[in-house]
Length: 395
Image 1 (tube, one colour):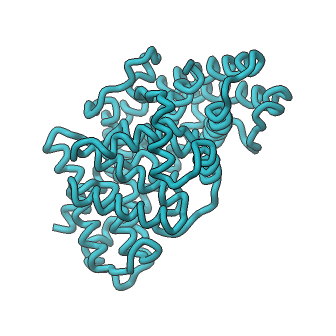
Image 2 (image 1 turned 135 degrees about the vertical axis):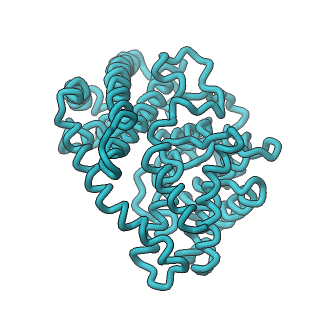
């Protein structure tokens, strides 16, 4: 049973999660006037200031400003602990795409209204979306890291597991039991029971016609198993799981090599051109004076792409915290928005050849899936870029 579960999980991570994103129909995307490229990646966020009371109470903060300041603080915080290294570790690891989108808005842009919507969704009737929202709120509580927040986070995780055996909560609790503290005592045998159960959930959801958000949904599970194989001599069922590590290591090298080659290809040149324009934009004295700028050694390739997105997210955190941008700031945001939209076009044009590479490959495994991590990076970057457009274009 365990080898079969492992095989299914590994195959899903390698292929299904990378190519199924556009096919997911579990939630309705934004009805607002997003571009066709972004419509599948963004969801409406109600801007209702009255929700502030509920979200402040949930996170034990005196007011919305204090809560936003704490969200901004943990966006750049160092690693917390092995079980919950950082809130970004769990980005897009949920079952439901809408929950993944809202969680991304919270951890990347410190969007209190997105967090308020998660609070609201966590109080709806007992559904997979509710359990996912509970998981997302738990992760935010863990990031805030007070004793009271930790206790509330554990309670939310347990509620999500009890409700519908929620995937991110089951994986998280398996991690907690595997490492021990600060969320539970260490118990490797019980941890493996949870992780084994988690391995069967993705296929179960597909059988139920409710496929999970495919961006990173199964990555945390796989990384957890790999860590245990490498570091826990007493790991139960080691002989059944060890083949995964043997397969994963050469496969990751193949995928890393392909990803490096791809950023040097002619297909990536339009992205590099836009990244050069982002470098110039974020070097402008007026923008630096208004919002500051992250330093980046590189403004090309994958590293440059992450720098362009992270710089915009830094600005977004400050824009969402402000009352209203001035006329000069609006002009700068318009320039950023236009450049960001061009980036989306360039990224979307990379998806088709990468998808074609996966679907038409005549190579043997693991070479046949060499484009998986490259396509996943493009899709996740596109989702982040689209979320930024929603911020720049909000009234």
